[in-house]
Image 1 (cartoon, one colour):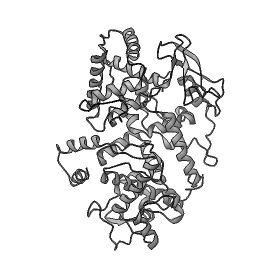
Image 2 (image 1 turned 90 degrees about the vertical axis):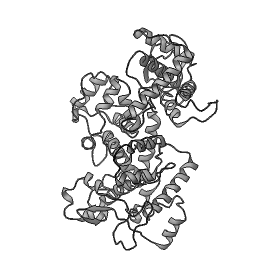
Image 3 (image 1 turned 30 degrees about the vertical axis):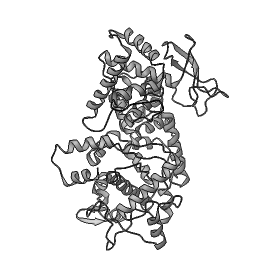
Image 4 (image 1 turned 180 degrees about the horizontal axis):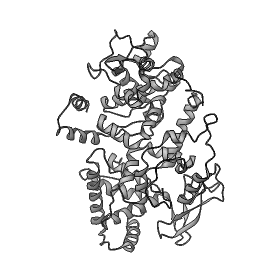
Length: 512
């Protein structure tokens, strides 16, 4: 992202696909759709333009570069290696193990001096750049700096660049919808006005002024991310007093988190990648990563059922405008796949749901258990079928009752060419060969009698939204959660009040 490529991004082909480690980080970044989109548009920088140019991962192309038997990446062509090395300045073949002699070049946020030999790891101390306790003493100014200090400097430089007339709005200020950028610019204006008023900043005339004033502003803010939170609070929530130790308001927390680390991205990609690894290890544990797991039509039935369950989960988000919701593994896998097409994901969710569901929110164990129980209860109330059969979490008395009775409530899932069908009935029909995945998804329908109606007992459709017994582990809770953003949903309602309301619009408004 910060390499030497200067022209427009070329069309996807084998030669431009990066190494596996880069794809892993890019994949993780895409699973934070709001942050990814915001980082691609909030500044006019090479990094932002490159993000905007690659909003969708070419999954089929990447899959063709992985051996289907061993699931190892195939040997890259000469042109693929050369393209990456010339444009990034880095070797194509990544190192699996980090050595004590491996170093990275960092610019000191305090004095802007380059430090060419910052270690990735420091055995025993844990202060390398690749470790949680990173701290380094600049070789020129002899002052220590950390990731937080680098984040404060980035924030201060953006403040000054905005005052100099550059396109800048702060990370964490964007909301969903057409008015998103307008709101972000307005919030950024208030933050800058607050800082100018407090610190009496002088005018900015040229690039030298930007660098010197950014450093001076960071000094005045004591190189503290808590100072960022303080001024963001007074700018964004002026009607509420803020005292040290008070919990941050959500919109302030977003800004605080965005500037708590180093790098161009406004989120901690390292922590996100580590959470992805846990998810993949769990999928491997239930056998879903086996090279032959879904090789035939019948073996692919759990995937199609997972797509149906994902659609139902999104419907539940709209119907349940409260608290975090926890997806199961199979739902989360489909959710990940949808998000890998960032632009399509944003357009689909805004059009169908009114907001972009947030993803990858880590929850404390107690909150996670309660959120999963609430999700299972909401699912049961809305669809009349168990949410999970993995047996590792208490899903409430209703689910226990259904398990004891052995009931398999059915759900009307699909309306296809005037006939109502189940997922497998749809797959088995003779005309599915020309039906695309999007046709399948767009054909899914929710119960129409009421927002909490149970499916009719007269329905004979099979299967339900729960899989066969051997698929139970796929309904194990995932570690990710979706959290509603009330201010985004209510802004969507304000927009809807100004346009013609459809029956679907009325449903959304009632839910909110």
